Length: 235
Length: 224
Length: 48
Image (cartoon, rainbow over all chains, first blue to last red; front, side, top):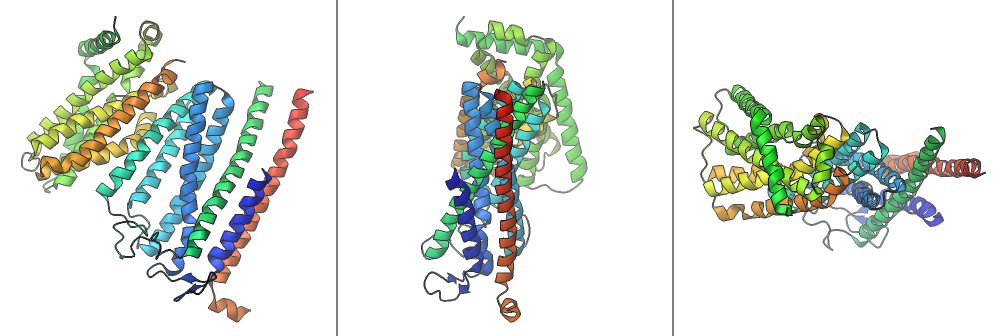
């Protein structure tokens, strides 16, 4: 557990320092200079902070669905506490991903919202989280609340794979690296476009924020347990 | 009784009780007429494009379905027949019986909207590729019903009438809505049948995933 | 120092983000500690 705690703190500190501190250079030499990506420039640094938010919100949804599934199997309320805790954090990261993405889009694509496939997906994820909590708040009975919301999150998860097939048919991708990227920046993740140091830092950032999510999740679960136990004692 | 015949029995019970009161059918018809009339007022004399028309077609279907499909389990709760149904029928029988009924309701709903659209938008709403259109409408209805049935069961058990249902169903149905709107626009624009194959594959996959998932999860919703 | 910062403005942003991150991280650490204390107290009271 110490590893999760100090690992996330350390890794994210490194990501912040390096992600914002390493200067851009037209002809990068070695590991301490980032290349200038035409059309993105300093905005490329968003990769280290915005993308992990989106990744974590999806991860949180999967974790929440998994614990929901475990609840349905075992009917142990502890799994429901875990499931809500993950969903709550997922909602937080989802909002952060949406807002940071929109801010970035304002300056890169000209407007806050463009209905790019990934913007649409995160919007739907936000709606699913919203519906999940709306459903939970509508049910009084604890067991009913736990099992109905678990079923709902699994049903929501079932639709997710279809977005991968549906989105590209409906709208052009604008994200750096997407097929329809209009500025012709091409696939950002092809070896030439994303410099090795940026790639390493990006993966480091994903790991760091995943650890942070795990740590926060554990704290939330512990709080939920205390809350639940004290509510039992009072009744 | 075999599983299939008891499913059919449950289905025909719902159909008979529906035909006796005609509550859902009448409400559905009035809803469709109101929605289409509102669209007509909004459009005035503008010429809607196929994309706009196909979009509005499914908007009408979505909101009408939302107002009527949720009743399927709520009506059982209101009449106090849930317990009886739990005793006499297995959960999968109940699920498929309700699914068939909801499918029948959605198919009749889309037929009503189609007839109304061809009447009031006779100049613009021309189905150029009938095969795409009818396959889309049929698969779309099935998809709507498959997702709507499990959600209706959730809402009925949550004891919150109406308001929660559109909130829950929109994120689930949005994939389906996008696909059927796309395919319907193709039908109106007169594209070849093969062009819409990708859309149909998505629809069939969606229906299979939803019915399969609902079938597995229905027990947990249905049994308290 | 001031001259350097007005040329390399990214470091101003770096400072701000670092400050925010230090604030958030120390908040999380304190929350973690507080939780541990609470767990100890409640579990002691609950089982004895």
